Image (tube, rainbow, N blue to C red; front, top):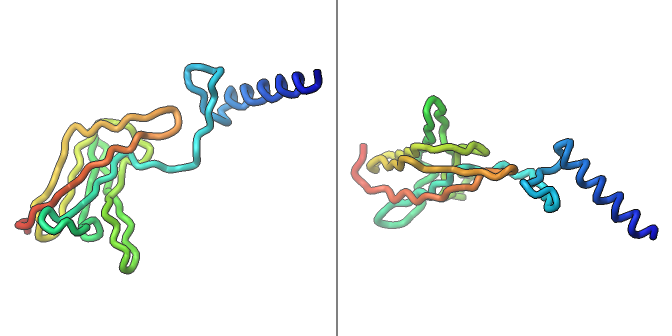
Length: 136
C-alpha cells in the first residue's frame, strides 16, 4: 500500500513539475520528457576544399539570413585544431539562406534551408559546402 502511494506521489510531483515549466511535456501528458541544457545550432555547414577535401572552416566566413535576421556563423579553431564546421542559428527555427566565403574560393550559398524544432531544441540541419578555387 505504501509503495502505491509513493508511486502516485511521484507521478503527481512529475506532472506538477511539467505544469510549472520545469520540464517539457509533449501533447501526451502521460509521456513527459526532460530537455537538456544543450544549446543546439540550427545549421551546421561542413566547409571543405572541393578538390583536396581539406577543411576550410577556420579561414572562412559564414552567415545565416532569414528576413531581417542576419548572423555570422562560427567555427572552433584553436591552435592546430582545424574544425570542419561553421555553426549558426542557435535554437532558432526558420527558413534560411546560408552563405559561405573563403579567400581564394568562389562563394557558396543555399536557399530555403528549413530548420525545425521540438519543444526543447532545434533539429540541426547539416550541409556540406565544397568550395571551388577561383574566388578573390
